[in-house]
Image (cartoon, rainbow, N blue to C red; front, side, top):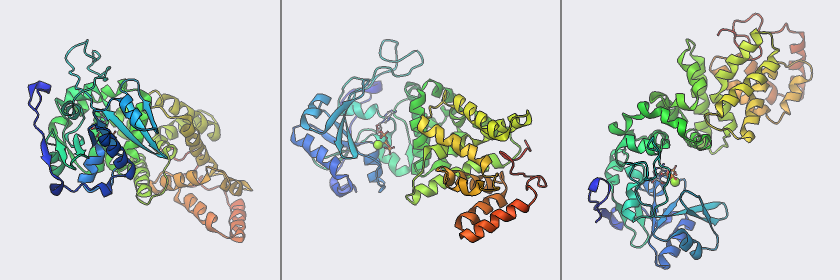
Length: 440
Ligand code: ATP
Ligand code: MG
């Protein structure tokens, strides 16, 4: 027993092996190895965090984190395949081919009650490098359901925070005072949304209440960390729910201000339909085990601002191909001050946008050449989404679907018919010119 945060006495609930469902068979072999090696070297070794939470829920964990009383240097001495990382808080990474088991030494609690104790004026944690006991380690975690431990010594589950109750009820509850915890680390707001979307859990009222009020705290989070967190929000198979919750708590506006603006002040339906369908597609692909790329995702999320700016530039006299290039560059430039986008993703994003214009220029040899473009498939998928959302011409999308599947003879016929037709679009309300409708 320990006197901890707010002088509360922390007595853990211990759940014996016969009373919970965690079996070593469901833990990655490498994580089990790490646990046993540490245990055999005389250290405490426990699984903690999402691994324990997901196993208790009967879900397949994404990764396995280990907590121990061994110091990082002591961990390194036990494993040959181990690297120490992190400056703020040293962590040991034990490498097994592509799998990494993260081993963290029990960490102490930092109280946010003064300028000299490791927090900035706004309450953000600056210093986080104090080792502690397992009880302290439990209390500095974010949510009660993330603070459960599985002890390799006796296969018990240890609960210092009534996390099991919340797990059963399906509730996400922060440890400690919610606003203080959001101020210490604003990313916890995004984590609340992410776990709530992923697990279908309700965010406890007291934890949900400060979200909108605290949303602007996200501005102080480094852009690169936000980028990582956004990928987790939108690439975990529950992107639609995450998007809706982010919008509900006004957090989306902090992450994608320009997109949010477009979605908020619109009388048309399609911008929001387009984003939701794009995210839904991503969710389906993940469920089917198909690859998804951050480039496509970001291209979807930023399309509406790009499309509007393109149209504005075209209206002021730019050629569509130049306009879309310029608009893409500008929107990305502004977005990266919010959440960084590595160049390996921003380049393909811009290509997907630029190809939207070229997909409408099908005459002569253009269509066939376009089909060999490395980004053709992504651009075509993007066009399908636009058409589904009612923003691009469905006939254009269909034409591309047909020609891809057609035998060479039909392909040639399609192309020659195209040459003799008057340019479509002029007669339609929804033209498929450049980047679509001028009905802004
Ligand atoms: P998943 O891996 O499924 O996304 P997770 O809960 O394991 O979920 P990680 O980011 O892997 O999340 O973090 C592991 C554990 O570390 C968490 O369960 C939590 O206990 C703790 N943790 C992570 N981030 C924070 C944070 N910002 N504040 C407090 N504790 C955190
Ligand atoms: Mg994890």
